[in-house]
Structures are given as structure tokens and as C-alpha cells.
Image (cartoon, rainbow, N blue to C red):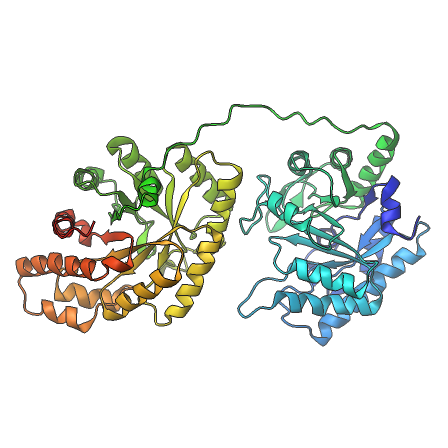
Amino acid sequence: MPNNIKEFLRDNTLLFDGAMGTYFAQLFRGQEANCESANLTHPERVLAIHRAYIQSGVNAIKTNTFGVNHGLGSISDNMRKIITAGWHIATEAADEAPNHPFVFADIGPIPPHDQADLAAEYREIVDIFLELGAVNFLFETLAGACSLTEICAYIKKKRSDAFIITSFAVQPDGFTREGASGAALYAAMQQTAADAVGFNCVSGPYHLKEYVRRLPKGGKYLSVMPNAGYPTVIGSRTFFGSNPTYFGGELAEIAALGAKIVGGCCGTTPEHIAAAAEQLNLRAESVTKLAINERVTAAPKPLPNRLLQKAESGRRLLAVELEPPADVNLPQFMAKAKMLADISVDAITIPDCPIGRARMDSSLLACKLHRELSVDVLPHLTCRDRNLNAIKALLLGLSVEGVNNVLIVTGDPIPTAERDEIKSVFNFNSRMLAKYISNLNAIELATPFHICGALNLNALNFDIQLKLAQEKIAGGVQTFLTQPVLSPTAVDNLRRAKQQLPARILAGIMPVMSFRNACFMNNEIAGISVCPEICALYEGKTRAEARDLAVRVSAEIAARVATDCDGYYIISPFNRVDVVADIVELVRARNLL
């Protein structure tokens, strides 16, 4: 076999081994967490697995180091020992094999963490491998391209003859767990020093085959290493039930589509790889490129987004929040929504289970209001308790219903007292969700979503909020709705935001209904701060006096911030739309809209 991978790839497909981790777990049940540590504690087990994969007919193997960097922090002596041992075990197995397969330094994703310099952390791992003599590198199961451009260039500078593969983990719909588009990552990596780009893990062979079928060919070598299939959990054990012959046939078809580098990920055993080797050999002479049979369908026409059109025309917007019911008593909610539609608000916003308490689904309500009242709606969409599949399903449904404005927020956690029974799920934050929706806008949706975000004017460190807002804008957020302006600090922070953020801002207006209400907001609701001067106005007031004061103070705040915002976001107190209607009337009378 040629010593140079590029020379080998001229006339051959490079076949990798399968998944060390899942095969190790299959052979040594109960010791799954010790896979990489076995380089030190049971090197004979790791060596035996390398030999089994080599005997199945591979041309390349990966070092048993994929998960070394998971949760171990910065480079430690033990980490260095595991990497060193993993390298020596793999090279021993390769050197004793007649075909001398290529050995790749296997590097998994480094989990992002606070104050992380991921490029520096990757360099520490790379340097160990370089010192050991590694020439070939595989960065696999990645969810994004963070630091890859830099680290690929770093490796090439150290070793110009290095061969680098970067591989992303995409779901069958082509998005990573962070919501990044696999096609966009594939295109971006064409401009780096990497030699090959592709996909591995998460998806089975059929779905990855159908995905790469749609990718533009040419450029860097394409690498594809799917899972054996999809796992089934029985008891406490995970099984991959894919048939090796089926897997081998699918992998051969992937190669026929242009993948010059193939192999297996989770669930693939030496039997799977042997079947792939057999199929690749059978088809080497006879197989031709599979035809790309894309079904041609008429693309749906984009729908007008009235709210966005109003905003882009320079009109000041008026959005009013209406809290969804906690039961099935919907007529009262619909009546209040109709009152808001009758006073011509630009949008009704609907929060998504505020303060972590279950309420009627904001997106379903938004669709109902849009259909029955012909009003523009802005459902809040939280990252809590939905994985990426659920988020995408919801967005597709909203799009079909003509609801194309969303307010994305990370979401309040489940109250502490309930955490033993109800677990909050936060797969990603609002910044990541913004990027994901932007990718959907670019790739799949006829009518793009107008993405709105939240801005906390009452944060103790507003500089951090501005930084987060800039990241949201980079991810695709176009408009911000702020927390209530109820203090001089919030007024000042709104002015700073308007000066520094290239986005529309709707200033939050929340009527204070009583002195007790002001105290409650200050002490019980995160992100809201009512200044002492406003609190003092309500002391000793009757209910009727407090109501009138709420309308007057809210209108005065709207006037005070008028030059520093693009409209208003009124949060109706206790769903008191009568109070909101009076505020809107007074604001309009003062020509603030």
C-alpha cells in the first residue's frame, strides 16, 4: 500500500475501522466509561480490537483517544499517558499487519465551557500527537466549526505532509445538535487547510447516503462514516440492530456517490466493516456513479410578513403580550385577544410557559389567533424542554400556518421544588437557536422567520447583555423586545443599546397596578426592577387611583424613551387589556406611535 494517502486515494477508497467505543462496550459490558483509560489498564483489549478491525479489511484505523478530552479539563499527566499509550497500541497493530494501514490521531469535540480557548486546547492535544510522530488527524463528531480553521492551519505549519479529516455529526435532516447546517459547514471547510471534509455519527447509512447525494461534489475529499443504524435501549443496555450486509451495501453506495473515505461509527463492528470491504471490492470494477434522482416539485411561494413589512417601512411597532391560560378556559383569552385586534395592535405576543409553569402552548394559540382573528402574532419560543427535532417540527408547523415571527428566549427553569419530578431540558441557548432558525431560513423555508430576541435592560452588568445581544444579532436576530423600563437605569441602558446595536428595539412597558404589585415584581420576578420613585407613587392609593396612575406612568415612560426605541412592547398586567387599551389611546394621542 502506498505510504502517501493522497496517492492511495487516486485509485482507491480509503476504508476506516468502526467504533472502538461501542464495540469495546459490547465486549466488556459494564466498563463502557473506561474505553480510553483501557489504553493504560488493559492495552491488550484495545490491541485485540484494532487487530479485529484490520483483519476485516480496513486501510485506516483510529487511535483509541476520541473521548480523552471529554471532561478532563486541561492537559494532565494522565491524559498525556492515555494519548501516548493509544498511539503506540494503534501503531503496533498497524505495523504488524501485512497492508500497514494508515493510523489517524482521533480527536473528538472539546465541550465548550466558560473562558474556553478551544484552539489552544486542541493545540495541546495535537502537539502530543505530533511529538509521537502522527501525520494523519481525524477531528470527528463535531457540532460546529469553532477553531477548526485555526487548528488545521496550525497542523499544516508543523507538518506540511499532514492529512487532516474534519467530520461533523448531522441528524437525518442535515443539522448538528447545535443547530448548524451540515451543508454550510461542509462548504466552509472547503476554504480551510483540511484535506477531507465529511460526516459521521448520529445518522444511519441510508440517511447519510441520501444527505450526501444532495451535496455539491468536487473540492476536498468527502468522508462519510455513519452509525450502524439507530440504537434500541433494552433495560440499561443500548443495542444497534443493523445487519452488517445491509450496512456494507449502503456504504458501498455512499462510495459510489463520491465519498473517497468511508468507515463506521457507533454500533459498527468488525463484521460491519468486513461486509463493507467485500461490497467495495465487488463494486470497484463494475459500479458506476449513482444517478441523482431528485424529485422536482414546485417551490411554495413566499408569504408576505406584514409585521416585518411595517418595521422595514420605518413604522413604530406596537406589540402587546397576552399570557396564555393555565387551563382550557379559552373563550376569555380569545375575547381579550379580539379587543387587542380591535385597537389595531401590530402584534400579540404570547409567552411560553412563563416562570416555568405549564400553560396552554404559545405556538398553538398563535396559530389560532392568526387564523381566527387575522392578527399578527409573535409566539415566544423557549429552548427549555424541547430537543432540536421538536424545535424544527414546531417551526415547520408555524411556517405552514403563516406564523413567521418568533421571539426566542432561553426560558425560565422549572421551579426548584419540582425538579425531582420534572427535569428541565436545555439542549441549547437562544443564541444557538437563532443560528439554527437562520439556517432553516436559508435552506428550507419559503417564507423566512423574522427572529426576535429578548434584551434585559435591568441586568446588573449590562455590558454582558450587550455582548450577548451582539451574538444574537450575528445569529440572525433582527428585533429585540426588552424587559420593562421602570427605572432610570433601564432608561440609560435602553439608550446605550439603541446606540450600539444594529437592530430594532421595542421598549418594554409594564403597568404597575399597585404598591403591592411593585414590591412583588421587585422581589419575585427575575429581570424586572421598579425604582423607589415609582413605588412611592402608589403608596396609599386606592385601586381606582392606582389604575389611573398605571396608565399615566406607562405613557410617560413611553414618551421618555421614544427617541431610543422603534416601538413599544406592552406587557398586559394580569391580562388587563382594558388598561392596555387606555395606555395605547394615550400614547397615540401624544403621537408616540
